[in-house]
Amino acid sequence: MKIYTKTGDKGTTALFGGSRVEKDSLKVEAYGTVDELISFMGVAFAEANDKDEKEAIESIQKKLFVLGAELASDEKGLTYLKEVITDEDIEKLESLIDKYMEKAGPFKGFVTPGKDKVSAALHVARTVARRAERRIATLSKEEPIREELRMYINRLSDCLYAMARYEEEK
Image (cartoon, rainbow, N blue to C red; front, side, top):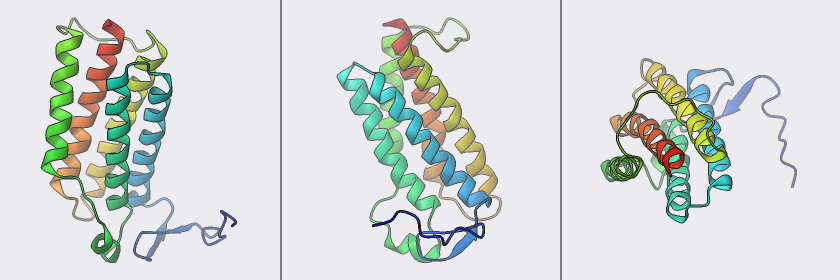
């Protein structure tokens, strides 16, 4: 099976549900940034040695696929989604933030990324999460975005910061 379809050669792409949008639309920019975030988290996962941290990263990546799928859906596609981001997912991130901040110790000032490969990758992921949050905020001016998506991506950047701090301190 070939992976190229040639359907995007004219600058459009299909949403989940079948409608087409321009490749530079805010919707594509938002879910594309989430996709980029998943990949940067993969770099952190590949470098990490801490079993619990790897499990947390992988769990977050899976939730980001859920979040990205919602962003990549049109109205019809939304009806097909089997899973969406929930308050429970946000609470799990908050628990991770508390866990890793406790392990990292008190905040001592700004952190310059690069102490090791894992923390550097987590800091890059954190900044991409912030960009995804900005893209989602911009998209929300054009179409409704569920509050749980906005909250999840906001908490995620804090979670990635906490995990990076933990890596730097351990």
